[in-house]
Length: 614
Image 1 (cartoon, rainbow, N blue to C red):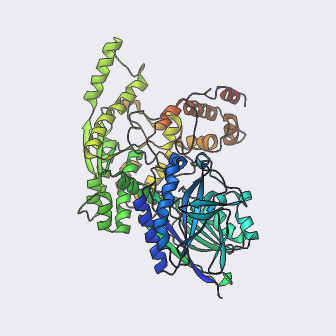
Image 2 (cartoon, rainbow, N blue to C red; image 1 turned 45 degrees about the vertical axis):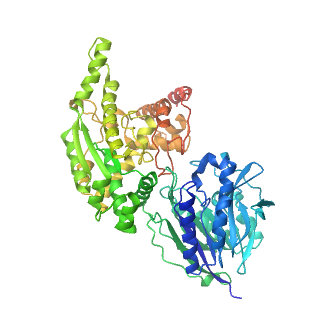
Image 3 (cartoon, rainbow, N blue to C red; image 1 turned 90 degrees about the vertical axis):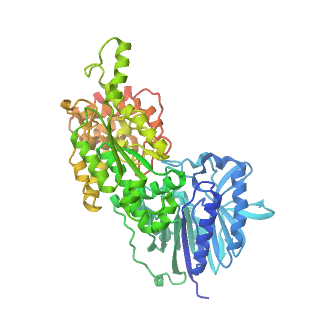
């Protein structure tokens, strides 16, 4: 018998324990796979419940309900083998499983052997790792089912699993033992979070290396969309065989599911057809697509009626505005206007600018310290994308608050003695009125702080950090600045020219003091380099200095490093209060999704004294 089979991978856009929607997406994928003649279909990790259920995985009821709903899916798996991710709980312990259903019969559940525990992942909190080589039987819904480290056989081929993190642990990959057991195919159902530049790594290290090392065909299937608020999943579906990349899907779709299939010759791999890869992995384009999908899903899943943004004319708020516009443009182009309007609660929008006008409300909130240049930049950008734009002054409110405090103190406030407080009151007074507008419009208030500001606390709590979603808190300032220049040229946002010619500034001090962000902090490029070494690579202050100074004495660099570490340790309380943010890069400073740090600490006092002696 010739062993040439069509193997499929289906990505699905799920929501934690949204049973109706999750099951509908799974069934739609199965039906399309059957229509295409797929023999074996791999769906993503934990796709039945959603990956982001967090502490609910520790409950008995979630896993029990997943098994109950799995029974709704089993009858649809006629003449096809389908692999569905779900939690499995027995003996008071939860495991991460991939259930194999073949021709309406559950064959078993493979349990994940390696748990993701770094970066954005906290899997050991919810799951136990399954020991390699172990197999048990459990009774579920009156069925006795094998679970553990299993190999399956169907259509004349043997297959097994590496579940997401299993494939990233090079020395512990289950694939080595699967090769010894003679598998022809390894399936990898994953919930692998999006980060720029990550997809190519998956192709090389997971699929190409895996298929070569284990002498088999390999299929990687990822989740899709903004599932639970912070993590974005790109819907990557990758096929490989014996070290050769066969086929790759287009990532970051707005559809509820996508199916890719590949005809694989298991007897003569050299005859398996390779397909042209068109997925765009350019970093700026990746960012545009990922944030568009994330904003689209956040809007529709939260059931909000749009976005509200305090548009200052600066880089950060301008980026947020453009990202909303890109979301509308890209989602409507892929889904069509009827489906787009239905998803986000619009009725008759048929062009990007009119839809943006209904979904995005912007306000420029000026004071006497604001410049005409930033007002012009904000107005021109809003007009160019079609946003509903308003402008007002808050000087009267600032003066009211300052007068009250001056009465309490018995003296006048001044920039010489009260600089930070006088800056912060302006930022904070912008918050209540923009919140009022967002509440009335039942819309999501976007905060505009970037990652560089999060590093050093260069943001006013209850001011520019105020909001319900922080779409760019995972990006550093140098990336923000270069992306806006790219968008002006490559995406046609010509009004960004007004923004791109400005030097980043908070505009909170009097204009004659020529306030700039880098004058207040340090050059953003240096801040980003220190961040990479100190936070991502976890280097001590002296190590950071040795690497960046390249053996040459540099007192200014020492001062920048001291400032970074002092501000970092002093401002953890601010990072704890960041609005939910998208994870977009390899690093993030949101303690809920990447980097945890104590609110109270020694502040690197001893380590910074050591720096003086280097």
